[in-house]
Amino acid sequence: MLNEDALSELLSQLDAVANAPLTAYQRELRAQGLLAESGVSIAQIVKAMRRYSLPWNQKKAAECGLPVDTWLEATRIVNQSPGQSLCDLLDRIHQMEAVAAMLRAGYVSGRDAHGRLVWSR
Image (cartoon, rainbow, N blue to C red; front, side):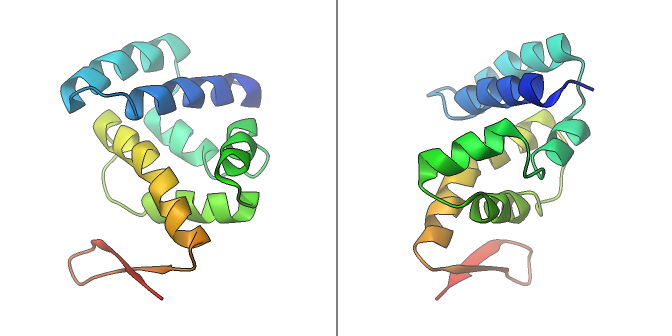
């Protein structure tokens, strides 16, 4: 397992890939190389994304103008989705800023009968 600074660097790189103007296939190819080089599993990354102390969480919360706890709530919401593939991870990273913006605007998240994310005030 990487230390927190190295994990944060990896997440920053994955964040850049997840939000790049590429197809899903192109994103996955770029991210595969980063993941292989790091030697970290997707499950380890997902687990690390929940840690308050992770510098990446501190940085992303500051970028979004949110308390870290609210950013971590966005992380929890997107990580409720099933699936442990690299594509799933990239989709979650991509969704996190949008979810954080919804929380900042005062919306409350939920799930419909099919497990899809829904919002209410």
